[in-house]
Image (cartoon, rainbow, N blue to C red; front, side, top):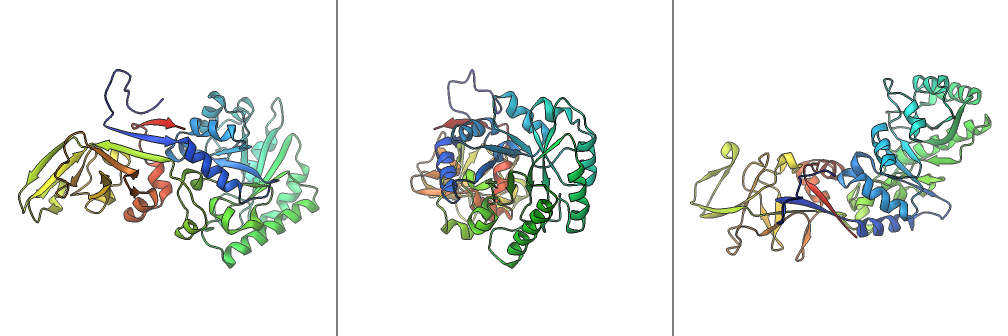
Length: 379
Protein backbone atom coordinates (compact mmCIF):
# COMPACT_ATOMS: atom_id res chain seq x y z
CA UNK A 1 0.00 0.00 0.00
CA UNK A 2 1.32 3.40 -0.86
CA UNK A 3 0.05 6.94 -0.48
CA UNK A 4 -0.81 8.79 2.66
CA UNK A 5 -2.15 6.74 5.53
CA UNK A 6 -5.85 7.34 6.06
CA UNK A 7 -6.48 4.43 8.43
CA UNK A 8 -7.41 6.78 11.28
CA UNK A 9 -9.07 9.43 9.14
CA UNK A 10 -12.85 9.18 8.92
CA UNK A 11 -13.00 12.08 6.46
CA UNK A 12 -11.81 12.57 2.94
CA UNK A 13 -8.18 12.74 1.86
CA UNK A 14 -6.77 16.04 0.67
CA UNK A 15 -6.10 14.48 -2.71
CA UNK A 16 -6.56 10.97 -4.08
CA UNK A 17 -6.64 9.01 -7.30
CA UNK A 18 -9.41 6.67 -8.33
CA UNK A 19 -8.45 3.83 -10.68
CA UNK A 20 -11.38 2.46 -12.67
CA UNK A 21 -10.58 -1.18 -13.36
CA UNK A 22 -13.80 -1.46 -15.35
CA UNK A 23 -12.48 1.15 -17.77
CA UNK A 24 -9.19 -0.75 -17.94
CA UNK A 25 -11.13 -3.86 -18.91
CA UNK A 26 -13.03 -1.98 -21.63
CA UNK A 27 -9.78 -0.67 -23.10
CA UNK A 28 -8.21 -4.12 -23.03
CA UNK A 29 -11.17 -5.66 -24.82
CA UNK A 30 -11.16 -2.87 -27.43
CA UNK A 31 -7.52 -3.59 -28.22
CA UNK A 32 -8.10 -7.34 -28.30
CA UNK A 33 -10.74 -6.67 -30.94
CA UNK A 34 -8.08 -5.23 -33.27
CA UNK A 35 -5.96 -8.39 -33.55
CA UNK A 36 -6.49 -11.95 -34.71
CA UNK A 37 -7.36 -14.56 -32.13
CA UNK A 38 -3.99 -16.29 -32.44
CA UNK A 39 -2.09 -13.16 -31.29
CA UNK A 40 -0.92 -13.14 -27.66
CA UNK A 41 -1.12 -10.00 -25.51
CA UNK A 42 1.85 -8.78 -23.49
CA UNK A 43 0.46 -5.96 -21.36
CA UNK A 44 3.04 -3.36 -20.37
CA UNK A 45 2.72 -2.56 -16.67
CA UNK A 46 6.15 -1.09 -16.03
CA UNK A 47 6.53 2.08 -13.94
CA UNK A 48 3.81 0.84 -11.58
CA UNK A 49 1.47 0.42 -14.57
CA UNK A 50 2.14 4.00 -15.65
CA UNK A 51 1.18 5.21 -12.17
CA UNK A 52 -2.00 3.14 -11.92
CA UNK A 53 -0.71 0.38 -9.63
CA UNK A 54 0.99 -2.60 -11.26
CA UNK A 55 -0.28 -5.23 -8.85
CA UNK A 56 -3.96 -4.28 -9.06
CA UNK A 57 -3.79 -3.67 -12.81
CA UNK A 58 -1.90 -6.92 -13.33
CA UNK A 59 -4.45 -8.93 -11.36
CA UNK A 60 -7.35 -7.56 -13.38
CA UNK A 61 -5.62 -8.08 -16.73
CA UNK A 62 -4.53 -11.57 -15.76
CA UNK A 63 -8.15 -12.42 -14.92
CA UNK A 64 -9.12 -11.23 -18.41
CA UNK A 65 -6.67 -13.57 -20.08
CA UNK A 66 -3.60 -11.38 -20.59
CA UNK A 67 -0.94 -13.98 -21.31
CA UNK A 68 2.22 -11.98 -20.59
CA UNK A 69 3.35 -8.85 -18.76
CA UNK A 70 6.16 -6.42 -19.52
CA UNK A 71 8.10 -4.50 -16.89
CA UNK A 72 11.29 -2.45 -16.96
CA UNK A 73 13.31 -3.91 -14.10
CA UNK A 74 13.92 -7.10 -12.17
CA UNK A 75 12.59 -5.35 -9.05
CA UNK A 76 9.28 -4.65 -10.76
CA UNK A 77 9.04 -8.29 -11.77
CA UNK A 78 9.82 -9.50 -8.27
CA UNK A 79 7.10 -7.27 -6.78
CA UNK A 80 4.50 -8.80 -9.10
CA UNK A 81 5.56 -12.33 -8.24
CA UNK A 82 5.44 -11.62 -4.52
CA UNK A 83 1.88 -10.35 -4.95
CA UNK A 84 0.74 -13.51 -6.70
CA UNK A 85 0.94 -12.63 -10.41
CA UNK A 86 1.56 -15.92 -12.21
CA UNK A 87 1.65 -14.99 -15.90
CA UNK A 88 5.06 -14.83 -17.61
CA UNK A 89 6.92 -11.54 -17.08
CA UNK A 90 9.41 -10.03 -19.52
CA UNK A 91 12.08 -7.61 -18.29
CA UNK A 92 11.98 -5.27 -21.27
CA UNK A 93 15.20 -3.43 -20.38
CA UNK A 94 17.16 -6.64 -19.86
CA UNK A 95 19.41 -7.34 -16.91
CA UNK A 96 22.06 -4.79 -16.00
CA UNK A 97 25.73 -5.86 -15.75
CA UNK A 98 25.67 -5.54 -11.95
CA UNK A 99 22.46 -7.51 -11.43
CA UNK A 100 22.45 -11.19 -10.52
CA UNK A 101 20.90 -13.57 -13.04
CA UNK A 102 19.77 -15.89 -10.23
CA UNK A 103 16.78 -13.58 -9.68
CA UNK A 104 15.46 -14.58 -13.10
CA UNK A 105 15.35 -18.18 -11.96
CA UNK A 106 14.16 -17.49 -8.42
CA UNK A 107 11.21 -15.38 -9.61
CA UNK A 108 10.58 -17.06 -12.98
CA UNK A 109 11.36 -13.95 -15.02
CA UNK A 110 12.35 -13.65 -18.66
CA UNK A 111 14.87 -11.09 -19.90
CA UNK A 112 15.22 -9.18 -23.14
CA UNK A 113 18.75 -9.57 -24.53
CA UNK A 114 20.01 -6.93 -26.93
CA UNK A 115 23.79 -6.81 -26.65
CA UNK A 116 26.55 -9.39 -27.06
CA UNK A 117 27.80 -8.67 -23.54
CA UNK A 118 24.35 -9.49 -22.16
CA UNK A 119 24.15 -12.57 -24.35
CA UNK A 120 27.51 -13.84 -23.11
CA UNK A 121 26.46 -13.37 -19.49
CA UNK A 122 23.34 -15.41 -20.15
CA UNK A 123 25.32 -18.08 -22.01
CA UNK A 124 27.79 -18.42 -19.15
CA UNK A 125 25.12 -18.71 -16.45
CA UNK A 126 24.51 -22.13 -14.98
CA UNK A 127 21.32 -22.39 -12.95
CA UNK A 128 18.95 -25.11 -11.92
CA UNK A 129 17.02 -24.59 -15.16
CA UNK A 130 17.61 -22.78 -18.46
CA UNK A 131 17.16 -19.03 -18.61
CA UNK A 132 14.42 -17.80 -20.93
CA UNK A 133 15.25 -14.82 -23.12
CA UNK A 134 13.76 -12.65 -25.85
CA UNK A 135 16.33 -11.50 -28.39
CA UNK A 136 15.90 -7.85 -29.32
CA UNK A 137 16.63 -6.62 -32.85
CA UNK A 138 17.23 -2.90 -33.44
CA UNK A 139 15.33 -2.04 -36.63
CA UNK A 140 15.59 1.73 -36.25
CA UNK A 141 15.06 2.68 -32.62
CA UNK A 142 18.79 3.15 -31.98
CA UNK A 143 18.57 1.88 -28.42
CA UNK A 144 18.77 -1.66 -27.02
CA UNK A 145 19.04 -4.31 -29.72
CA UNK A 146 21.31 -6.09 -32.18
CA UNK A 147 21.88 -4.02 -35.31
CA UNK A 148 21.91 -5.10 -38.93
CA UNK A 149 25.68 -5.61 -38.89
CA UNK A 150 25.34 -7.95 -35.91
CA UNK A 151 22.82 -10.38 -37.36
CA UNK A 152 25.13 -12.94 -39.01
CA UNK A 153 27.27 -13.20 -35.89
CA UNK A 154 24.16 -13.22 -33.70
CA UNK A 155 22.63 -16.11 -35.63
CA UNK A 156 25.81 -18.17 -35.27
CA UNK A 157 26.04 -17.42 -31.56
CA UNK A 158 22.39 -18.22 -30.89
CA UNK A 159 22.69 -21.47 -32.83
CA UNK A 160 25.56 -22.53 -30.57
CA UNK A 161 23.85 -21.60 -27.29
CA UNK A 162 23.24 -24.31 -24.73
CA UNK A 163 21.24 -24.03 -21.52
CA UNK A 164 19.27 -21.02 -22.75
CA UNK A 165 15.70 -21.03 -24.02
CA UNK A 166 15.21 -18.50 -26.82
CA UNK A 167 11.51 -17.95 -26.23
CA UNK A 168 11.06 -14.79 -28.26
CA UNK A 169 12.41 -12.30 -30.77
CA UNK A 170 11.34 -8.65 -30.56
CA UNK A 171 11.85 -5.16 -31.93
CA UNK A 172 10.47 -1.70 -31.20
CA UNK A 173 9.08 1.29 -33.13
CA UNK A 174 10.41 4.77 -32.29
CA UNK A 175 7.40 6.43 -33.96
CA UNK A 176 4.38 4.25 -34.64
CA UNK A 177 1.83 7.04 -34.06
CA UNK A 178 1.48 7.33 -37.83
CA UNK A 179 1.80 4.83 -40.66
CA UNK A 180 4.63 5.83 -42.98
CA UNK A 181 7.54 4.51 -45.04
CA UNK A 182 9.92 4.64 -42.09
CA UNK A 183 7.72 2.32 -40.06
CA UNK A 184 7.15 -0.01 -42.99
CA UNK A 185 10.90 -0.25 -43.55
CA UNK A 186 11.30 -1.25 -39.93
CA UNK A 187 8.75 -4.03 -40.32
CA UNK A 188 10.58 -5.21 -43.44
CA UNK A 189 13.95 -5.22 -41.64
CA UNK A 190 12.48 -7.18 -38.75
CA UNK A 191 10.92 -9.70 -41.13
CA UNK A 192 14.27 -10.14 -42.87
CA UNK A 193 15.94 -10.68 -39.50
CA UNK A 194 13.40 -13.36 -38.63
CA UNK A 195 14.11 -15.12 -41.93
CA UNK A 196 17.85 -15.10 -41.27
CA UNK A 197 17.32 -16.58 -37.81
CA UNK A 198 14.98 -19.19 -39.25
CA UNK A 199 17.63 -20.22 -41.77
CA UNK A 200 19.85 -20.96 -38.76
CA UNK A 201 17.21 -23.06 -37.05
CA UNK A 202 16.02 -20.35 -34.64
CA UNK A 203 12.22 -20.03 -34.65
CA UNK A 204 10.93 -18.74 -31.30
CA UNK A 205 7.22 -19.06 -30.62
CA UNK A 206 6.85 -15.41 -29.56
CA UNK A 207 7.59 -12.70 -32.13
CA UNK A 208 6.60 -9.15 -31.20
CA UNK A 209 7.09 -5.59 -32.35
CA UNK A 210 3.77 -3.72 -32.11
CA UNK A 211 3.26 -1.32 -29.22
CA UNK A 212 -0.03 0.51 -28.60
CA UNK A 213 -0.02 2.71 -31.70
CA UNK A 214 1.35 -0.03 -33.94
CA UNK A 215 -1.55 -2.30 -32.99
CA UNK A 216 -3.70 0.24 -34.86
CA UNK A 217 -1.32 1.39 -37.58
CA UNK A 218 0.78 -1.66 -38.47
CA UNK A 219 -1.29 -4.86 -38.57
CA UNK A 220 1.56 -6.57 -40.43
CA UNK A 221 3.64 -6.07 -37.27
CA UNK A 222 1.28 -8.02 -35.01
CA UNK A 223 3.24 -11.27 -35.60
CA UNK A 224 2.43 -13.65 -32.71
CA UNK A 225 2.35 -11.12 -29.83
CA UNK A 226 1.58 -7.42 -29.32
CA UNK A 227 2.56 -5.08 -26.47
CA UNK A 228 -0.13 -2.54 -25.53
CA UNK A 229 0.86 0.05 -22.95
CA UNK A 230 -0.48 3.61 -22.76
CA UNK A 231 -3.74 2.78 -24.55
CA UNK A 232 -4.67 0.30 -21.82
CA UNK A 233 -4.87 3.30 -19.51
CA UNK A 234 -7.09 5.37 -21.78
CA UNK A 235 -4.55 7.74 -23.33
CA UNK A 236 -3.37 7.98 -26.90
CA UNK A 237 0.17 7.95 -28.31
CA UNK A 238 -0.98 10.40 -31.00
CA UNK A 239 -4.00 12.61 -31.67
CA UNK A 240 -4.97 10.81 -34.89
CA UNK A 241 -5.63 7.63 -32.94
CA UNK A 242 -8.43 9.30 -31.00
CA UNK A 243 -10.56 8.89 -34.12
CA UNK A 244 -9.66 5.22 -34.44
CA UNK A 245 -10.47 3.85 -31.04
CA UNK A 246 -12.73 4.94 -28.19
CA UNK A 247 -10.79 4.54 -24.97
CA UNK A 248 -11.83 5.24 -21.38
CA UNK A 249 -9.46 7.10 -19.06
CA UNK A 250 -8.67 4.79 -16.15
CA UNK A 251 -7.35 7.40 -13.71
CA UNK A 252 -9.36 10.15 -12.02
CA UNK A 253 -7.50 12.58 -9.77
CA UNK A 254 -9.57 14.45 -7.20
CA UNK A 255 -8.83 17.10 -4.59
CA UNK A 256 -10.82 19.73 -2.68
CA UNK A 257 -10.79 23.45 -2.04
CA UNK A 258 -9.04 24.13 1.24
CA UNK A 259 -9.88 27.83 1.61
CA UNK A 260 -10.83 30.87 -0.49
CA UNK A 261 -9.52 34.44 -0.46
CA UNK A 262 -10.55 37.56 -2.35
CA UNK A 263 -7.89 39.93 -3.72
CA UNK A 264 -8.19 43.42 -5.22
CA UNK A 265 -7.03 44.27 -8.70
CA UNK A 266 -3.25 44.50 -9.07
CA UNK A 267 -2.35 41.79 -6.55
CA UNK A 268 0.58 39.47 -7.42
CA UNK A 269 0.00 35.82 -6.50
CA UNK A 270 2.27 32.84 -5.72
CA UNK A 271 6.02 32.44 -6.28
CA UNK A 272 7.59 35.05 -8.52
CA UNK A 273 4.42 37.10 -8.71
CA UNK A 274 3.84 35.81 -12.24
CA UNK A 275 0.07 36.26 -11.97
CA UNK A 276 -1.34 39.71 -11.26
CA UNK A 277 -5.08 40.10 -10.77
CA UNK A 278 -6.79 42.37 -13.30
CA UNK A 279 -9.98 42.72 -11.28
CA UNK A 280 -11.27 41.75 -7.87
CA UNK A 281 -10.54 38.04 -7.88
CA UNK A 282 -11.68 35.11 -5.75
CA UNK A 283 -8.90 32.56 -5.42
CA UNK A 284 -9.35 29.01 -4.19
CA UNK A 285 -6.41 27.09 -2.75
CA UNK A 286 -6.17 23.41 -3.65
CA UNK A 287 -3.68 21.10 -1.87
CA UNK A 288 -2.08 19.69 -5.02
CA UNK A 289 1.37 20.56 -6.36
CA UNK A 290 4.36 19.39 -8.29
CA UNK A 291 5.37 17.06 -5.43
CA UNK A 292 2.12 15.23 -6.24
CA UNK A 293 3.08 15.10 -9.90
CA UNK A 294 1.08 18.09 -11.15
CA UNK A 295 3.36 19.71 -13.75
CA UNK A 296 4.89 23.02 -12.76
CA UNK A 297 4.79 23.85 -16.47
CA UNK A 298 1.03 24.40 -16.05
CA UNK A 299 1.63 27.55 -14.02
CA UNK A 300 -0.76 30.24 -15.28
CA UNK A 301 -2.05 27.99 -18.06
CA UNK A 302 -3.49 24.73 -16.73
CA UNK A 303 -7.09 24.19 -15.70
CA UNK A 304 -9.00 22.09 -13.18
CA UNK A 305 -12.71 21.37 -12.96
CA UNK A 306 -14.92 22.81 -10.25
CA UNK A 307 -18.65 21.98 -10.52
CA UNK A 308 -17.93 20.84 -14.06
CA UNK A 309 -16.50 24.23 -15.07
CA UNK A 310 -12.92 24.95 -16.01
CA UNK A 311 -10.97 27.13 -13.59
CA UNK A 312 -7.53 28.36 -14.58
CA UNK A 313 -4.40 28.00 -12.48
CA UNK A 314 -3.51 31.44 -11.07
CA UNK A 315 0.23 31.80 -10.59
CA UNK A 316 3.07 29.37 -10.16
CA UNK A 317 2.32 25.77 -9.26
CA UNK A 318 3.86 25.20 -5.81
CA UNK A 319 5.22 22.01 -4.32
CA UNK A 320 1.99 21.30 -2.43
CA UNK A 321 -0.53 23.87 -3.70
CA UNK A 322 -2.19 25.34 -6.73
CA UNK A 323 -4.22 28.53 -6.75
CA UNK A 324 -7.26 28.68 -9.02
CA UNK A 325 -9.43 31.58 -10.13
CA UNK A 326 -13.02 30.90 -9.03
CA UNK A 327 -14.35 34.41 -9.51
CA UNK A 328 -17.06 33.11 -11.81
CA UNK A 329 -18.23 30.59 -9.22
CA UNK A 330 -19.39 32.63 -6.22
CA UNK A 331 -20.77 29.57 -4.42
CA UNK A 332 -17.44 27.78 -4.21
CA UNK A 333 -16.08 27.38 -0.70
CA UNK A 334 -13.95 25.07 1.43
CA UNK A 335 -14.63 21.39 0.78
CA UNK A 336 -15.71 21.87 -2.84
CA UNK A 337 -14.54 18.98 -5.03
CA UNK A 338 -11.84 19.74 -7.61
CA UNK A 339 -11.10 17.43 -10.53
CA UNK A 340 -7.45 17.62 -11.47
CA UNK A 341 -7.69 14.82 -14.04
CA UNK A 342 -10.91 13.19 -15.17
CA UNK A 343 -14.55 14.03 -15.92
CA UNK A 344 -17.30 15.64 -13.88
CA UNK A 345 -20.69 17.18 -14.79
CA UNK A 346 -19.95 17.32 -18.50
CA UNK A 347 -16.42 18.67 -18.18
CA UNK A 348 -13.28 16.63 -18.90
CA UNK A 349 -9.57 17.08 -18.41
CA UNK A 350 -7.44 14.29 -19.89
CA UNK A 351 -3.81 13.31 -19.43
CA UNK A 352 -3.39 14.04 -23.13
CA UNK A 353 -4.57 17.64 -22.63
CA UNK A 354 -2.34 18.16 -19.60
CA UNK A 355 0.60 16.75 -21.56
CA UNK A 356 0.01 19.08 -24.49
CA UNK A 357 -0.18 22.12 -22.22
CA UNK A 358 2.94 21.07 -20.33
CA UNK A 359 4.94 20.30 -23.47
CA UNK A 360 5.29 16.61 -22.69
CA UNK A 361 3.50 13.30 -23.35
CA UNK A 362 0.67 11.57 -21.45
CA UNK A 363 3.04 8.77 -20.43
CA UNK A 364 5.01 11.23 -18.29
CA UNK A 365 1.89 12.85 -16.84
CA UNK A 366 0.52 9.51 -15.63
CA UNK A 367 3.85 8.10 -14.45
CA UNK A 368 4.57 11.25 -12.44
CA UNK A 369 1.45 11.06 -10.27
CA UNK A 370 3.17 10.73 -6.91
CA UNK A 371 3.13 7.61 -4.81
CA UNK A 372 2.22 9.82 -1.85
CA UNK A 373 -1.27 10.04 -3.35
CA UNK A 374 -3.52 7.17 -2.29
CA UNK A 375 -4.91 5.06 -5.12
CA UNK A 376 -8.42 3.73 -4.67
CA UNK A 377 -9.70 1.00 -6.95
CA UNK A 378 -13.22 0.72 -8.32
CA UNK A 379 -14.67 -1.85 -10.70
